[in-house]
Amino acid sequence: MDRQRARGRRARPSRRTPLLYTAVASVVLVGTTAAGTVYMKAQAHDGPAVVSSAASASPSASPAGSEEASVEPVAEPSVDRDALLAKALESVTVAAGAKTSVAVLDVGSGESAAYGDTAFDTASIVKVNILAALLLQAQEADRHLTAREKTYATAMIENSDNASATALWAAIGRADGLDAANKRFGLTDTQGGDGELWGLTQTIASDQLTLLRQVFGDDSELSAASRSYLQGLMGEIETDQRWGVSAAGDGSRWALKNGWLARSTTGLWDINSIGRISSDGHDYLVATLSNGNSTQAKGISLVEAVSKAAVSAFRDTAED
Image (cartoon, rainbow, N blue to C red; front, side, top):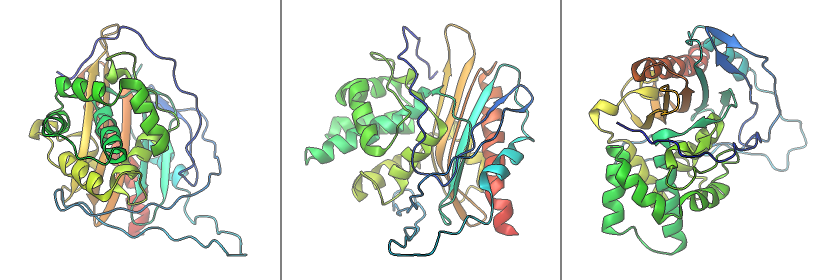
């Protein structure tokens, strides 16, 4: 089981929006339909780039270009991805009391969209963040990971081993170390959990998409070697954990990390999934979060349905 008992909680992070997306739609799925008002925020756009990894057969793409001397106004996107994402998610049934949020990036086009900005417990998806922080610290110290650190990293990512996560959480300096690394990575609405409660780190979907861009993009604080190493581990997830955002892909290429946590206070489940998937020749980064699920199985079904709907908002228009 992938769970931690809550002994306390840090204050939720502020609702600042990362400057990584062209536009963000903010709304939370509650009950059986998408409730709330979709509103748009113009943001500075930073085109993504993805590097390949021999270990995990990761896709590659060129960095999105920019015209720094252009005197012409930048054309608005021809497709409103946020509106399409909101529309696609109307087909997803969310049980009473459950909530979900998703962010997705089309690697090829560089377009992204997000739905929901509520903070969620990370559960074990924070293990990607922990390893990214450890790799960044090792880079800064001009050293390689030790054999023991590599053993912990493999068990933590591939098998979701909690004891290994706790060891590396201590190695990075717990929440302070995670928060310092995230400042470098550009995660503005993620805050490490209290004490050893790494699974109660608070985050939003768009921040997890930012983290995925650090792991899979070459415009990253992580070196090519660090990215390749982390991508490789995410491409070797234990067989019974290959669910979540991977359901939105065609199975040809994927790398992911899932998190599942039954809250001791309510008995309800946090179910989360982040990763890179491929569908019909297109590569996507997807982060789907949820809480308030009555069972683990229902939470997994919700996350998979949301992930499929999110990718369809990009795939369907790509096929037009």
